[in-house]
Length: 255
Image (cartoon, rainbow, N blue to C red; front, side, top):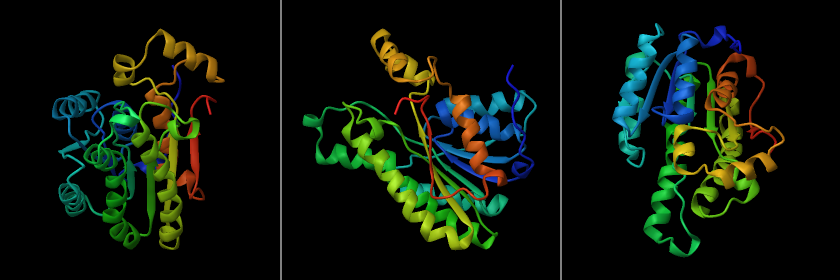
C-alpha cells in the first residue's frame, strides 16, 4: 500500500470544494478529511454526497459537511459559502472542481446550450473565488485551486464548449494570481489527464479509448482519482507556499 504524505498545515484548515460528491472531488474530500481538515463541499447529487459523508465518518475520520447546491445558481453558491464562513470562519482553501464533460457535437450547439456549459464548467469558479477572497485575505491569505483539463492542450474533439471552458480556467487563474497575490492568496490550476473515475469508466472508456490512452500516455496504466487528489493536497498545504500562477499537468505524459 502506498504511504500518504502528511501535511500538518492542513489540520483544522477550513476547506471548500465544489463537486465533492463523487469522482475526483470525492477523492479530494476523503484525503483532506484524513489530514484532519474541516471540509465542506457542495454538489448536486444528494445520494452520492450523503454516502460519501457516511463513508468518511464510518472510517473514523472527521466527516465532511455536504451542502446541496446547483452551481449554475450563483446566489445559491454565494449563500453556501457565506454559511460556511459564518459557521467555521474564513475559507482558507477553495478547490474549484465541479464540471461536466458531456459530449456535444459542434454543429448541434445552441446559444442556450453554450451558456449552460459555460455556467456548469467555468462561471461558478470565478464567483466562488470572488466570494472567498475577501475573508481569505483578511485571515492572512490562502490557496485557490482551479481544476482544468488536458482536453484543451490536446484539442479533444466532440465537446468544444467544455474544452473552451477548461482553457479559459487557466487564463482566469493567471489573472486572479496577479490580482490576489498581494493579499497572500495563491491561485493555481491542475490539468488532469484521463482520470479513471467511475463516471469515466462507465460512460466513456471502451477498448478503443483505452488503447489510445495507452498509446498516448508515457505511463502505460490507468490514472486514478486518488493520485490526482494528492496534487490538490500539496497545493492546499503550506508546503506549496511559493507556488502560484502555475498549471500542474497530471496526465501521465499524454500532452
